[in-house]
Image (cartoon, rainbow, N blue to C red):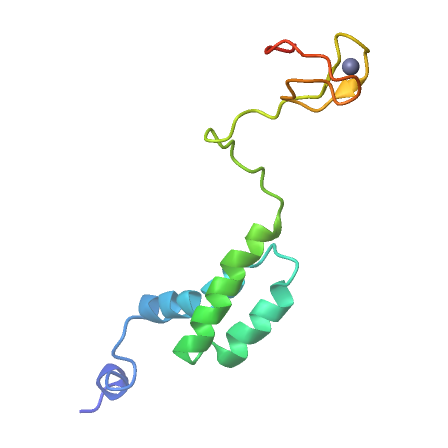
Length: 115
Ligand SMILES: [Zn+2]
Protein backbone atom coordinates (compact mmCIF):
# COMPACT_ATOMS: atom_id res chain seq x y z
CA UNK A 1 0.00 0.00 0.00
CA UNK A 2 1.43 3.36 -1.04
CA UNK A 3 0.89 5.76 1.82
CA UNK A 4 1.34 9.50 1.82
CA UNK A 5 4.58 9.43 3.75
CA UNK A 6 6.30 6.69 1.76
CA UNK A 7 5.40 8.40 -1.48
CA UNK A 8 6.80 11.73 -0.39
CA UNK A 9 9.82 10.48 1.51
CA UNK A 10 12.06 10.21 -1.58
CA UNK A 11 11.36 13.87 -2.36
CA UNK A 12 11.14 15.37 1.09
CA UNK A 13 13.38 13.17 3.09
CA UNK A 14 14.72 16.21 4.90
CA UNK A 15 13.00 17.63 7.90
CA UNK A 16 11.05 20.89 7.37
CA UNK A 17 13.37 22.52 9.89
CA UNK A 18 16.20 21.71 7.54
CA UNK A 19 14.51 23.66 4.75
CA UNK A 20 13.82 26.58 7.06
CA UNK A 21 17.44 26.66 8.20
CA UNK A 22 18.63 26.39 4.62
CA UNK A 23 16.35 29.23 3.58
CA UNK A 24 17.62 31.36 6.43
CA UNK A 25 21.24 30.60 5.57
CA UNK A 26 20.56 31.43 1.93
CA UNK A 27 19.20 34.85 2.87
CA UNK A 28 21.73 35.40 5.64
CA UNK A 29 23.54 38.21 3.72
CA UNK A 30 20.26 40.06 3.21
CA UNK A 31 19.37 39.41 6.84
CA UNK A 32 22.67 40.90 8.03
CA UNK A 33 22.18 43.91 5.76
CA UNK A 34 18.57 44.50 6.75
CA UNK A 35 19.48 47.81 8.43
CA UNK A 36 22.06 48.94 5.89
CA UNK A 37 21.62 51.69 3.35
CA UNK A 38 22.39 49.31 0.45
CA UNK A 39 20.07 46.60 1.70
CA UNK A 40 18.18 46.47 -1.60
CA UNK A 41 21.36 45.96 -3.61
CA UNK A 42 22.54 43.20 -1.31
CA UNK A 43 19.11 41.57 -1.40
CA UNK A 44 19.04 41.59 -5.20
CA UNK A 45 22.53 40.11 -5.33
CA UNK A 46 21.51 37.58 -2.69
CA UNK A 47 18.45 36.46 -4.65
CA UNK A 48 19.90 36.36 -8.15
CA UNK A 49 23.47 35.32 -7.41
CA UNK A 50 23.11 33.63 -4.05
CA UNK A 51 22.52 30.21 -5.62
CA UNK A 52 26.10 30.39 -6.85
CA UNK A 53 28.47 29.93 -3.97
CA UNK A 54 30.64 32.85 -5.09
CA UNK A 55 27.64 35.18 -5.35
CA UNK A 56 26.52 34.21 -1.90
CA UNK A 57 30.00 34.87 -0.47
CA UNK A 58 30.15 38.26 -2.19
CA UNK A 59 26.74 39.20 -0.82
CA UNK A 60 27.80 38.09 2.65
CA UNK A 61 31.05 40.07 2.55
CA UNK A 62 29.21 43.07 1.17
CA UNK A 63 26.61 42.86 3.91
CA UNK A 64 29.27 42.72 6.60
CA UNK A 65 31.72 45.23 5.16
CA UNK A 66 29.08 47.88 4.49
CA UNK A 67 28.92 48.33 8.23
CA UNK A 68 32.51 49.61 8.24
CA UNK A 69 31.58 52.78 6.40
CA UNK A 70 30.86 54.39 9.73
CA UNK A 71 33.73 56.59 10.90
CA UNK A 72 35.59 54.67 13.54
CA UNK A 73 37.80 56.55 15.96
CA UNK A 74 41.39 55.60 15.32
CA UNK A 75 42.94 53.83 18.28
CA UNK A 76 45.70 55.75 20.04
CA UNK A 77 49.15 54.95 18.77
CA UNK A 78 51.49 54.69 21.74
CA UNK A 79 54.55 54.48 19.50
CA UNK A 80 54.15 58.08 18.42
CA UNK A 81 54.86 60.87 20.89
CA UNK A 82 51.99 63.19 21.74
CA UNK A 83 51.62 66.08 19.38
CA UNK A 84 53.51 69.01 20.85
CA UNK A 85 51.90 72.39 20.58
CA UNK A 86 53.58 75.48 19.35
CA UNK A 87 54.98 77.75 22.03
CA UNK A 88 55.83 81.37 22.22
CA UNK A 89 59.34 82.68 22.34
CA UNK A 90 60.49 83.70 25.80
CA UNK A 91 62.41 86.62 24.32
CA UNK A 92 60.17 88.12 21.65
CA UNK A 93 56.85 86.41 22.32
CA UNK A 94 56.34 85.25 18.75
CA UNK A 95 55.08 81.73 18.09
CA UNK A 96 57.76 79.11 17.53
CA UNK A 97 57.34 75.62 16.11
CA UNK A 98 57.12 72.84 18.64
CA UNK A 99 60.45 71.37 19.65
CA UNK A 100 62.48 74.28 18.33
CA UNK A 101 65.59 74.98 20.37
CA UNK A 102 65.97 78.49 19.01
CA UNK A 103 63.37 81.05 18.13
CA UNK A 104 62.64 81.23 14.42
CA UNK A 105 62.07 84.96 14.67
CA UNK A 106 64.79 86.32 16.90
CA UNK A 107 67.10 83.32 17.32
CA UNK A 108 66.97 83.35 21.13
CA UNK A 109 67.64 79.99 22.79
CA UNK A 110 64.51 78.42 24.23
CA UNK A 111 64.22 76.29 27.34
CA UNK A 112 64.07 72.56 26.67
CA UNK A 113 60.71 72.08 28.35
CA UNK A 114 57.88 74.26 27.14
CA UNK A 115 54.52 74.21 28.81
ZN1 LIG B 1 62.00 85.11 19.63
